[in-house]
Length: 145
Image (cartoon, rainbow, N blue to C red; front, side, top):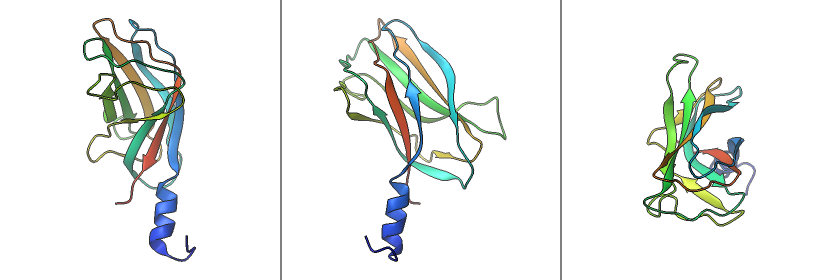
């Protein structure tokens, strides 16, 4: 990377995570009610490029028994309103099966962004008998506009 070449500088900045937080282990039939996991620090609004779940264990995907995982932001302007910024399922056609200690992409909602002071929340709701979700870490990454 040439330190003075602006595209290289921009790509280096955007590849850094905006925020990371713990995703608690969740039993197959237990829902994870929306819970606050962090707040975006000072700076400017940042468009989301990707959201990754860094798995702490394995998960076997299933199209009938699965979880829907939703990551929301709650803004200072509308603190009572949950705005989805990423959502996906643990179905075969969703995130697929998880191998331990790998990154799994969670689809980002088109046009999603975070701003200073936004509160980030996560929720997981099971369908049928669900699947056990291992304790993991969720990371948010920005993108170039």
